[in-house]
Length: 469
Ligand code: PMP
Image (cartoon, rainbow, N blue to C red):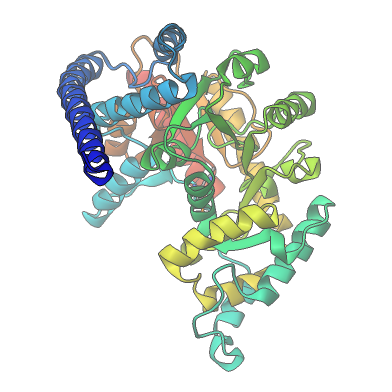
């Protein structure tokens, strides 16, 4: 046989080997798809049962048990544990998606309240996290300057250079840190900075730790990006403080980020400094990103330390004009992180938005000159008043260290926050059910975003409903 003939025979054999292997792989994949269908059906069934008994979708303990078994099996069969856990995370997230019920949050109550108002009902809004006062005066004036100043065209994705300079200076002074414009990304609200940090820094199958109760968007952003959320449930009895031990046990090779939000929505908690220090120490040791949502820093009543002060290169701090400057509708906020992280986040922002509206950036830059200390005084006074009233009504809660809310437990047999929030609407009061912030069925969130008279009236209605129940 000619050597070229032998060579082509060999190639032919190799091709046929590849085809055999490919056929085998296809069969395995098809088997996996069938198993996925069986698993999804079971997940749906579990979801129905959970809905009937009012149980939350995620069960950390059970999931962790399964995770342990998978790691054990991976060791036995010689499969990479990180890969196996990533695959498990994909399956767990799919189960969450098929089980997700239409959870009622502060937003759904807000929308119901709005439609009642359209029908002529009067509703006191103690469900929203939106200051009732106006933005600083300078905002109104600077809106009219936009044309003459020429802020009417496309701009850089990261934000107007002059605005980023101003923000860097503002942040450096306020938190006594060294921040430059390279560390700033202007975004439409803090929400987009949070979304872009989670979506660009983590990969599908990675894990992110969220301390609950929490603003629901962290979890939703993660689920949207195929990231598995590991939940630490804190309790009122434990003063809403997470356990470092629990956090340590939760961290594995897939854990990439921890989310912090202090002063906290919904509890108003600020962590004791030592506890916060040890969380950052742990994050540094494990090289985790720390996403710190500091949107309520303006409303810190007691001592509070920005995560910026740790000078940790893997931290991302998010800030906004929504709460501090009462500029919710302007949709303007920013992220603060290392140049490298900002570059990554900016790429997504360029892709999604091109840039934040230039007129709004200009106005926000001007708003930096305003003195907003009175806003915090107003909210603190209201929170003090609400706390007093809530105590009289026998609600259980911790006095908020900051933010704009009271997260209260209603100690009544079979109390259900969602049912309560819906029946309160009929009596002219909107409150947020605890369920929107995690597994907190017997809690409600009351916000201090109305004037004192309206808040007193709201608390009076609340007291009446409690008595009637
Ligand atoms: N983080 C927290 C904790 C919030 O409560 C909110 C708004 N309710 C946001 C972020 C989003 O704020 P922004 O309007 O800046 O997008």
